[in-house]
Length: 283
Image (cartoon, rainbow, N blue to C red):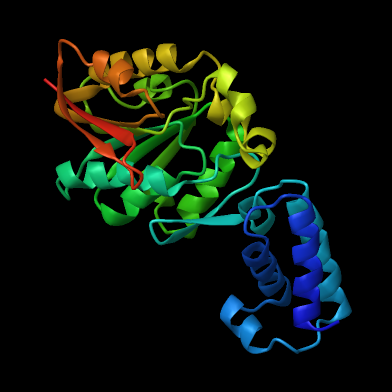
């Protein structure tokens, strides 16, 4: 079987199973199975695919046809130019979440700062901030120990593991054992904000494969955001930052939580013009 024949067969199967962008996914999966790049693959369109690689490739195509996200099949996802290990234990980092990092870097000095990442998942926020802020110390929390294990590996991969403490627990509660009140310079978070009634309307790749705890949480978004805002006010120093990602149509509700003791700094929109990141300062 040649490269173009393998791609044609894969595209047919992926299309039959309603996979979006079947050609691109087929090329990525075949390139990975052959240990090469997409550009090199297409430059050798008529090369033979050896039997071992063919079996691996079509096994991955079958996984993709069942709805398994490409990132989980490959075991990685890029975020701000860094590669992160991902598995069904963690939420796949999205480009929109990069706006959380940008909002933090806009307002943080590149010095010895204490930061917390709530609901760290793959660790993409904590690791990205640690890479850019080499003197920062970070605490990253998550309810899921399997997620924390992946986050630890991602931190080690990018050489920042010694500056991030990964803690299992709810929101900022684990940080209390490490820091007193008013000692954090910033809290960042991409909390679960999908409502239980919205779950059925999500793409099957998200609904059936990504961790429910990272999507819906264990208590619902309104209660979770309210507790996060309250805990952040206790843990942040005066002037400290709270930067959170929000879901579609959540701007009014989340900003409404920032009453006495907070100054709303702004709401950043994503590339589709959807309000995505709320930034506030503790006063």
